[in-house]
Image (cartoon, rainbow, N blue to C red; front, side):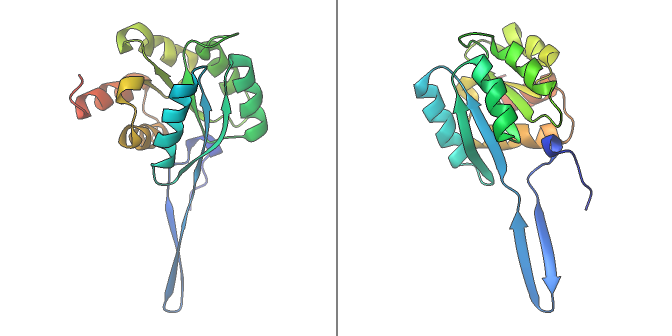
Length: 166
């Protein structure tokens, strides 16, 4: 099995065969949710919980707390809002990605992609996803694309096209 950095592993199935028995082991993607609005954190939590192979390991409300939480919890994936109290989600993304073995960061916002997709890419985010399109399929697709090394524009564009939003 190829060993990828923690931040670039995609959900995978490993089959171990012993005699006539097969055992499947699935990696769980550990997710940190960062948003200052409780209603959206609740929605994001539900999306993560309804996505096979994903689990919420923590939540943060400010940019500074997201950096600390990412350092302590070591998630595989961070769902990052743009506008946060304290430092912005884009600044927090840059700081998180500067850490050793950083997680994948997906930036989510109510702003239109034209406004923030390039800024999210500049901060190092793997994808920019409008909150209005965020669902289990989009989450799984963005994670898979990030594992394949896709750029923000590719993920954002294909996500919108796939759901008739583009």
